[in-house]
Image (cartoon, rainbow, N blue to C red; front, side, top):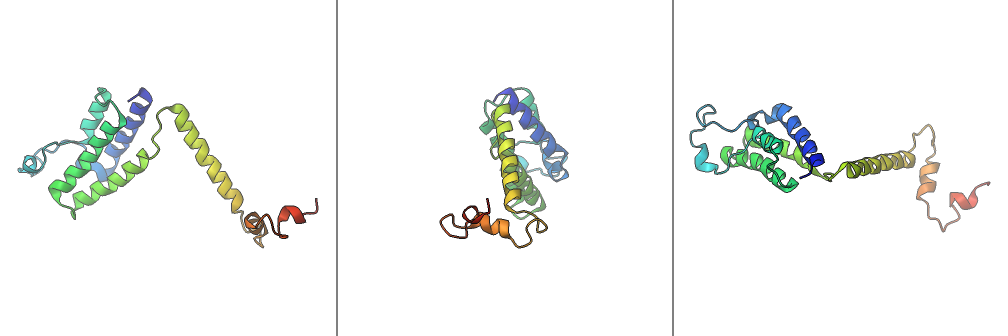
Length: 162
């Protein structure tokens, strides 16, 4: 894991820690404090967000996959111990969805991150151009012409007054 990735991962963990839905997952489970005396009977590899944060700061993850494995372990442990249809499980699933979305197309460096941003902006501009406001195209002429078959007489370029 390079410094760029480490910084990005730390930001993600900080957001998870601050998110109220993740409050049960911030610190390691204490069987006495948390009223879970049999926790270690079910969970052989406990994990928490603060532990992941500490591991990141101490450079203990050699790659992104190791980091993701520990984050996913937090959600898995919550579901395993508490059951599939419990509040903790639903909180873990919601946090997992958010985390997985953040990890999609995770950049390796600043250049790759910039490129993804440019791609997204380009797509947004293209989408805006293809769907003009009704005030600019009340008869859907621009949209219709954009979608017309280039080999037909209806093609805007062939029939234009240029």
